[in-house]
Length: 422
Image (tube, rainbow, N blue to C red; front, side, top):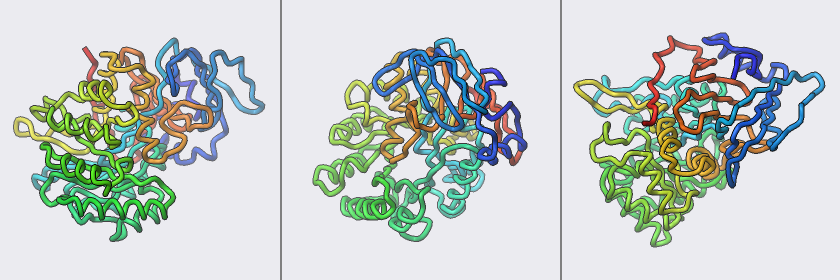
């Protein structure tokens, strides 16, 4: 896309552009007609034109005629056959920074707005991990609201690795009932100090179900797995006994190793969601299943609607005496490899990287490219090699890999490296 294609009225970087994004509702309405892209729909991918007016997709059709809207400027852009996917939905990230398990010097920094957008991410669900002393739910909620103000769709999970969990209000049910931003509970199994018995898991699931009903949202229990089978086996017992409804559970980090992945496949057959983690890869964690290969194996063996991929951005791992941070762009790397290896047709990858998570979390308007939805659109070439363009709410925030909207605070970091599939 060219600079003139920006429905917000032009390009810019730095605080001025971020301020403009916060005042988006006062900007004049503009329209964008994307022609000739290969649009990933619910059942397939086909060449379609996409009309965006303001923040919404209003039409997707094989050959839209020239559009004239009284008082609304319309810009046409030829996508020349590039893929149009929904912006990625990252349902497991640490926007306030993760890590810290090795002492204060191992704490990672907060994640900037443009680090998410240059990774093709339009929706972020933040969570906490081992550290709920320095990093609190209050700080996480504030960071989510800051990302929302800049244009991302942002939510969070209450809870943590430890059990009983730290929360915003002191009670899982109150968090779910009182805060729209809270879309579920993160907990852990198979870790020291985590949920350790079927009865503990049952009680936690009951609290999630009751709080979610009160808050008018689907019950979501997002479970961190450790690198051995103990956690998976505990979940399997709880689901098999009927004590925890499978449909409310997602297990994440399923690609720690082939043994955990195989056990997670069995859980998926019982109805549990299975989530591949982009930063769990052999060069970071020896013995891990490469994320794109884990996606391929899962899609070969379980229903596509059970499979998601997340970044787990914000953590870090030690390497040669230094800490290697886990960036949101790792999620885009997995998508690129899936496209290059033709792991699945683009419309199924759109479900795995966006639609399935949105559906499980009860989010409407994101995760699909359909009329009436929010215009969060990821434009990428079919091979996964070229720079991306990203629209959020109809506004171009990344163009040809370069962020056009940046965080208003602090100096922007060097661009995150993007791995081109070979």
